[in-house]
Structure formats: C-alpha cells, structure tokens
Length: 236
Ligand code: C5P
Image 1 (tube, protein in one colour):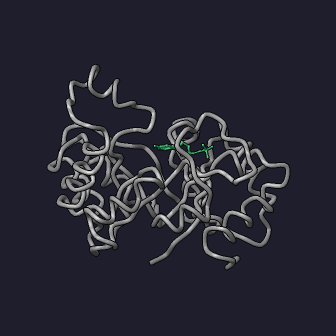
Image 2 (cartoon, helix red, strand yellow; image 1 turned 120 degrees about the horizontal axis):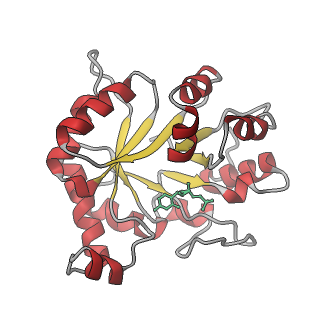
C-alpha cells in the first residue's frame, strides 16, 4: 500500500500555488486541490500540476443524482488525477454511478473515496438539522460500509476513526485523514487532531496536511518532517 503525505493546497490562485511549489526542488509532493482553486483556475491547473509530475487528489466532493455524477466523473477521468471524492450521502447507487463514470475505457481509474459526515457537522446539528437520529460515529461507520459496498476505495475520516473504519471495512479499505498537527504546532480551527506519527499508528493510509506545511516558515522542512514522522523516517 502506498502511504503518503498529501499537501492541502488551499490557495486562492495559481500564482500563490506556484510560488509555494517553487520551494520544492527535490520532491514532488502529492497535492490536494479543492473547490477554491479548481473553480478559480479550471481543469488547466490540474493538467499543469500533472505535467510537473505531481500526484493529485481532486477534492470536489460530488453530490448529485447518479446520472449527473457519473457524467461529471467521466469528464474528470480525462484529467489523469490520482484520487477524487463524492459524498457518501448521495447513496450507494450514486457512488456506483460515480465509479462507473470514472472508469476509463481501458479499465483504469483514479482512486475514489467517500466523504462520510463532514467534520464540521456536530452530532447535534446532524440530529437536529438533518434528522439523522443516530450517534455520529455509527453514521460515519455506516456510510463507510456503504462506500465499500459500492466498490469505492476508501473514505475521508478523522485519524481517530481510521482503526474503526478498517475494522468495519477491512484493512485494504483506504483511510485519508485530515486533522493532522505537529505535537508542538498550532491547532488552528481543527478540533479532533493528531500527529503524523499517531495517525500512522492509528491506521491512516494518507494524511492530508495543510497549514502546518503551507504556513510554515520553512514549508519544505515541515513537509519533510511530516513524511519522516508519518512514514517512519523514510524521506522520499
Ligand atoms: O490546514 P489543514 O491541515 O487544517 O487542512 C486540512 C485540509 O483538509 C483542508 O483542505 C480541509 O478543507 C480538509 N478537510 C478537513 N476535514 C475534513 C475534510 C477535509 O480538514 N473532514
């Protein structure tokens, strides 16, 4: 399994992104591109990053009727991205349609993972606003199981949930985990956090790290520290 550190590139423009990336002369980090940058710059940003040799997690969190998601995924499959995602709340049939759309004629496809419940949704809001009258953790595990049934590769979850997801869905089901901070670092607005080393112990396959790297005085050193802590000393 390819464990890796993914840098969350939460930048407003291509210029900001490239000025950040120019510091990386020896490594080609795996990058997460979200809605902000994708909507601002369009598919060309992904093509440009792929041409520079980066792996890309395109974090667009699709959630629509199965037919629409299938067609959107077919478009994304041409971008040669490495990972993308949908909301598990779209149902098993929507996730199956996403997988179908994403699969290229030669049978290859990027990894497809599901968002279960956003970490910004508290149990209280889920129960009161969404009328989902179950404990949050039970909902997260149920959605993860649905993603597995639909044939997806894994879920985005808290590192603290990674072990339980593996217990429910099997060890090869991927856990992609944000909410990672250095032991001596700032928490920012993240609440349920853990360190890169702890995330590895808990079973994360990919950690998604934004501000601890992008806002660091020395982003390359921060990235290397993340890789060393997460992969156990192995700097790629
Ligand atoms: O800066 P930070 O390390 O908190 O960045 C984490 C990244 O992971 C951000 O892009 C954020 O939107 C994303 N994310 C998250 N929690 C989730 C899903 C995605 O923090 N549940």
